Length: 325
Image (cartoon, rainbow, N blue to C red):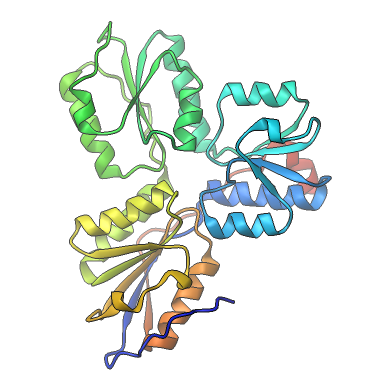
């Protein structure tokens, strides 16, 4: 239960809340969290995780409170301990270091991220230069670039394309981080295709289904709203993109971890609020925000579903036997 340190005055007009769907956990996040839950129940503790299991403060703090240790360096993990690789994936160098330290490694990488890794390996083996569209420093980008660092060039913005130099324009391919804004990625892709007409696209778009679906919901529903609340953490790329997408459509947006972050000043003159959640934000924080809006603003909740999602991913093979038991 959250303790709200602010006092919100009820509005005279009942607030209307559009509750977007799809929202919240995607299949990759569900798999990673289920894997960590199962590891806690069935394996010797402590359990270590390389980086955050997903980019969400609520999820990470919940697991930390139950004894999970999140590390940024494998040197922090004792030899022979259990280590989960996060949903964002890791480089071959990290995998080899885990083997060298005799760690019990459990790979909770999202299969859609693994798909991008495999594409990078394939194109690098064919002698291609690969333009990776993404954000510098993001865990997923670091892992993907680690597959073929000599062959991959990071491209963060359309303006970067003009300065790109390659030895053989007939052997070029592009890949994308899975959590990008579709619009932003397409602007870069269009610039790449204009400059390098022979560039090869991935067989299937790299931006994941969940990212696209959540962006579509905001793009459609923001037109009816005065304010958009996005549940998600500041280091969540896909959550940041949802907030940006609303702003691009002229609707103020706020990216929050939960109701404790809400400022009453945001709601002055606001009659309709769009509520959504990034792919790593749990439904419990969505419900906490809805409870606050009901209590303080007599809000009525209107669920709005644009697409149904029924995607699921298998648990890591290292845990499937334990799951069967």
